[in-house]
Image (cartoon, rainbow, N blue to C red; front, side, top):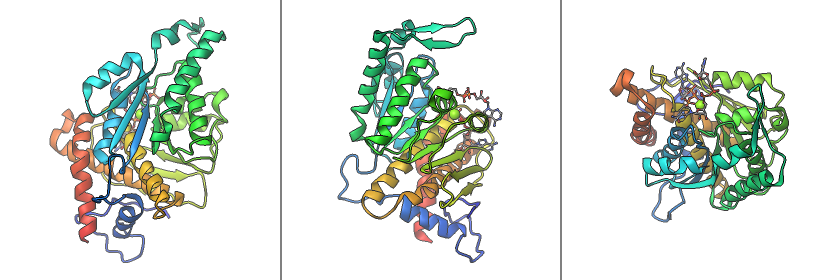
Length: 340
Ligand SMILES: NC(=O)C1=CN([C@@H]2O[C@H](COP(=O)(O)OP(=O)(O)OC[C@H]3O[C@@H](n4cnc5c(N)ncnc54)[C@H](O)[C@@H]3O)[C@@H](O)[C@H]2O)[C@@H](O)CC1
Ligand SMILES: Nc1ncnc2c1ncn2[C@@H]1O[C@H](COP(=O)(O)OP(=O)(O)OP(=O)(O)O)[C@@H](O)[C@H]1O
Ligand SMILES: [Mg+2]
């Protein structure tokens, strides 16, 4: 079923009567994708999200993804980043638990830059130890997480990629941790040495923009049945690899401003709905088949928040304005769903 719709809201009634209209999808989103808030909840009940990204060059992207997860409704958000990015990100917000997991300057000294600007990792034991240390710093936190978002602001250092590929494999094989791969993590997947790293052990959602999708299609990356491609655009297209799962189109109207960082906001939002699917599945009130609907719900959230933020700020709209609009937009959409 491919449905063009937004999460149920009173201003959107397509009373076409059949069962795939917006209101039924909105109700389904509520019931199967969004855990209820209750007095029995404790810190972390509504999700503990990890963001692996943040480098010397990029500190905003992981911040946008991590803050989006909290603004959507997760309780805790951890950022695993380069030491050089940790202080700036900590300064953006006290709510984020920011852990440096490698030093860019150390990685740079064990990487050789070839005349064609290609970087290769030195094969000495010191370089290997640095990679092992980064892998351990992140994997030792995985038991605390309900989902892990990899890529926002990650950069493309070959040693970081070597560590991240092992983190992805351990997240899937040992922790069955749901993953979101965005931005430079998508670039990693397009590199031949990493074409085969994904497995069926856990859900993996890829969130490419148009250019990143083109690169993926031009590569020979092997995508498992548990993979869902969420291609961002005027219409967000949710395309499961598993033909048994539903595909969705989110045609919710967003805003006209295309500022950097909104994709990172969506990556953090998808991380949260995957955490919710993980929690609801453990409680027996959802299952993995609901992941495409959860991705569609995340797209609706971000599109609506972007529309609200653009309505206020117009050309001056930036990603923080979208973050600010996330909570109120979600409340408006879900409260309407409840009241219909
Ligand atoms: N404030 C920040 O720290 C930000 C950091 N970012 C990070 O920057 C790194 C590189 O991200 P990029 O998005 O630049 O990735 P790429 O290096 O893949 O560049 C994609 C390029 O394609 C272009 N593009 C995007 N959508 C397009 C479309 N529909 N049609 C044609 N061209 C299109 C964009 O102008 C962009 O420069 C990532 O790690 C990312 O997370 C970005 O997310 C932006 C915000
Ligand atoms: N042409 C468009 N019209 C309307 N919305 C769009 C359009 N292109 C993208 N979007 C929306 O903007 C958001 C970010 O998508 P985009 O393609 O900009 O991601 P990105 O390039 O990864 O962004 P980032 O700068 O964060 O990396 C998504 O919610 C997507 O639905
Ligand atoms: Mg992006």
